[in-house]
Length: 337
Image (cartoon, rainbow, N blue to C red; front, side, top):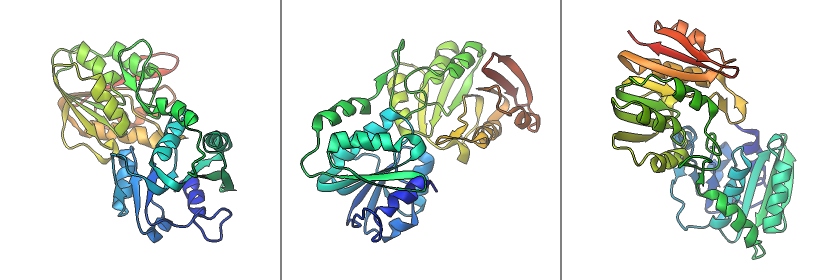
């Protein structure tokens, strides 16, 4: 459980340093389940990460994807790791907190919590905070004194932004939101043009690699774009809308497995959970991919050179090779028999 979440819940403790009464209704942006929420009459979660969204629902809480125009007496915020995303979520909180309501944020100190507290204070006026578990929680009340010009400036970052030197867009908080990932470029540059039949892009982000595959490989009949971040899926829909072949978009957690199999799978798998390195996440992507190949199906993977993925291929029984490498990346190509 994230330490910032424990710190966030302290705000609603009657013996806490800055207690806020548990509301009849609350909205949780970046929702993650916590035992203390069981005492709340009603809390609604918004969570773009499919794995966390599923965990929230399994815990028995209500989740929504479309925030609409509804306002809540308390809005909780557990932001992501980028500056632009955090400020966008502050603005979401502002847009959905009721008059007289309270915005409550918690962040790790290592994520710049003190800096973001000061930024929120610029927009809201008075902010009160506490520190615990190497994190900081801070709250602001919608008492009519918000500086709307600051929120208007941050609101720009809520919309998908153009990727330089492309016709594509990405949203703050998604992977490689301000540029094409160099690893994906390296993989696209080395993909064989013979890919055919049914293809999947696992962890597809906002769609660069899927777009490249469709442009390079005319024999592809269908492509499944699979991505855990709902915001990235929405951007991918916008970015790939011009293709004449079948593209299906899946908001799905790859680590839970895939419901079908493919003639080819391409991927630039993640190896972080939040801000922490998680090599097992990339390994799980590989295992799922290998289990989802048709007979003679092929896997095309790019990874940072230092990641120890070769052992997964060694134990798989697939025929594999290092197809190319440079000072940063390696390409691992494998084939099912």
